[in-house]
Amino acid sequence: MTQPLFRDDAYAQSCTTTVTRHSETGGIVVAASVFYATGGGQPGDSGALAWDGGEVAIIDTIKDGNDIALISADGCPLPPVGSPVTLTLDWTRRYGLMRVHTALHLLSVVIPLPVSGGAIGEGKGRLDFDMSEAPEDKLAIEDALNALIARDLPISEDWITDAELDANPGLVKTMSVRPPTGQGRVRLVRIGQGADQVDLQPCGGTHVRSTAEIGPVRLGKIEKKGKQNRRVYLHIDA
Image 1 (cartoon, rainbow, N blue to C red):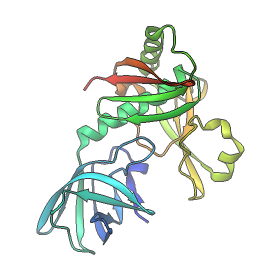
Image 2: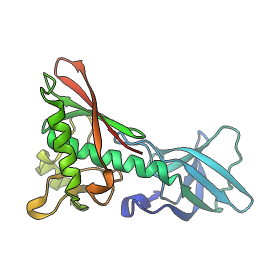
Image 3: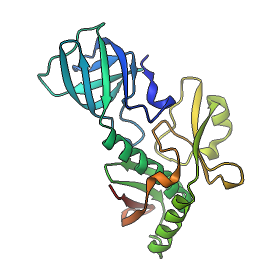
Image 4: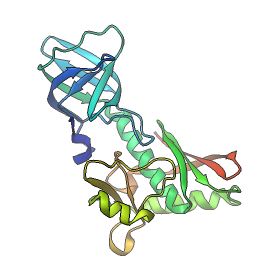
């Protein structure tokens, strides 16, 4: 199983590891990774992989069973299995995704309804809500969201067992995506502390350390995607 270094330190921008195998589709499977693999609406990371005698650009990162596979462009040479390699993130892209991801957690706070879907992109993201009618005052939601961001709330994590999560279903806001389970424990992402806590939910993605790092956000369009579904977009500055 690939050790997910990004889970312990989302700010780690590089690491040295070894190639454990090549996947059937040509991915480079590594023993440890600072690259996040696509999942939970968050895209896989990109960057570079270097070894003694070569270097390739990594254009995507995906899951391969319990491992993480780094994807290079077709036709690129692959490092030999067993060779030491250095992974270097496209940090500007990753940090932007972290800001958007954390902003979406806060969007689920200011719109306290079940979430039926979501996606994280570069400079923007969206959540789908179990909502029959669009909000009457979009500006009020945007103002509430920016007020939470401006409070500079710390973001931390805790761990609970799968059984504890099953006993507390209210922690899960998403209707269509289940938290990553099966490893015996689940990570909870907490925004705020004590009386200032505003959110606590299971999540396997990467986040910034404080809400102030998100910066100002703008709400985009709100689309009707079904009788009980409204899609809300948000945008952040570069």
